[in-house]
Length: 316
Figure 1: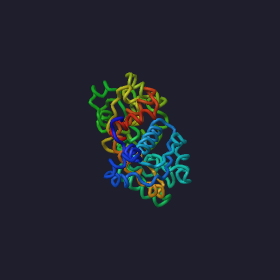
Figure 2: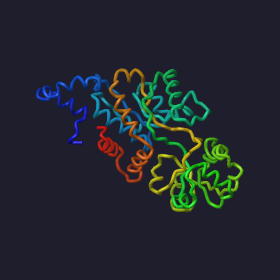
Figure 3: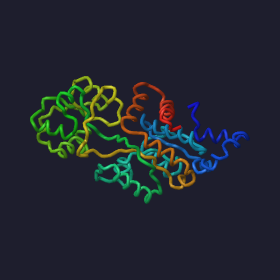
Figure 4: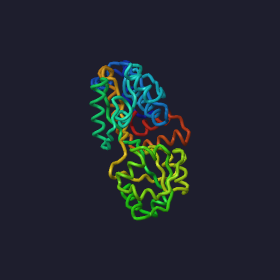
């Protein structure tokens, strides 16, 4: 980063006479980017992925704008952040489209599995209901998955959930699956999955064991089970070399994160939009899994991981 000019460093250097002379031709270009120095406060939830999103946001805004950036990373849970956003205690935080649709009011029972459809619907709804804006969504999807032991996947050739359904319906039920009790009961979990993919009757012959979800990754990774339920961005998938089965018929709900911003604040500090959209575009599933791993498994500081990522990817 020492050899790289950020928009912020250019602005600082421009404060001196020599800098002003050398950068005069650039000042006009930066004017539209830098904004007017408004203040924003960044919130986040308390788990690793959300803290990373918070630190990624605060760092890129500090380096790429002259906005006064304050941090409330790790503020609390979903409701705490949402209420703080509505009350003006924070300017924005990253929320998942599936959470906006199904958990925050007005809640919806309908399951939407197309990323753009749910993004468009919650964006329109949150603007109308709360005068909040959604910036670009990140490509990564923190939804439910079935993840298989790598050797089992290679041996069976089961790569997708359609493959899995066909494999089970063909009478292959002599293997173990592990999942938590909630997933076994949720309509957007195991019961709905077996119905959607058409193997509900055959699934009754499977050996399904109830475990704590945090243990399922290890159990499957070490070969004590063939498959586990999990969450798509969990770094245990990397640690235990698990293979996520593709949801090729789109059953599971979509959970793409996007910055949810107070509309007035976005107008007052329009400079924040481009850096946050650039950041969102860089966060696919493999990337966020890797960043989560550096924090929760490799025990690195989330702020440092965020800064390193932004530097290595030319975002600051």
